[in-house]
Length: 233
Image 1 (tube, rainbow, N blue to C red):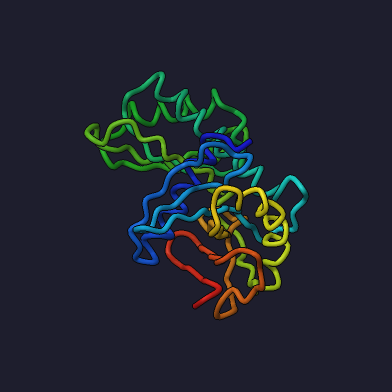
Image 2 (cartoon, rainbow, N blue to C red):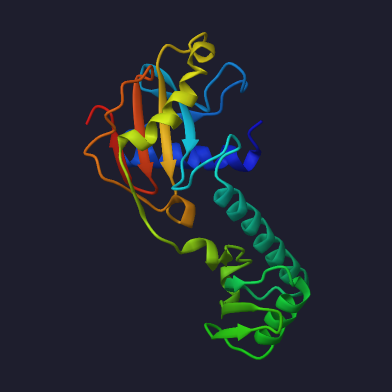
């Protein structure tokens, strides 16, 4: 089952695709996940479905990319850290963390010490005893609670060049679901997404278009946020 967070992320990807293609799509969640694709799109008088699959530069197992799973886990830990901090302070901070993120008490205490002795837009590099490196910036109060903290280790890495052949296994896997989807919609499209804001999604597509023969009526490759490659362009 797709989690609520995944659903929201998929809708963001589809909305960004529409924006990049200069289309005014109305995008909604389907009635269920069993016989419907990820999203249902209304484009004027035409209605179609979009199935969404995130791709990574790693060799994936049936459960997906282990690197992407670790990134999601690390992001959850960082958000929990932000929550613990804001339980004790209402001063907004912009934070990036490298290294150990398991020493919650030490990190929060270091941040509280920083905000108690700093002014707006002050910034500091903090090294903890247990292997955390924290880049903290104090933000003005009017910004409000700022939780877009980042685990920096997941944001850097090498870029992998890929071509259409690399995408075929992702397409083939998703094609298996088309017979169920066409019970409700005749036009089913596939959106493959690489998110380079994470290390796992740092790819460069070297073909001019996604030249793949497929049962999908269209295949889009979105290198988030605004690079799109299509089968018909």
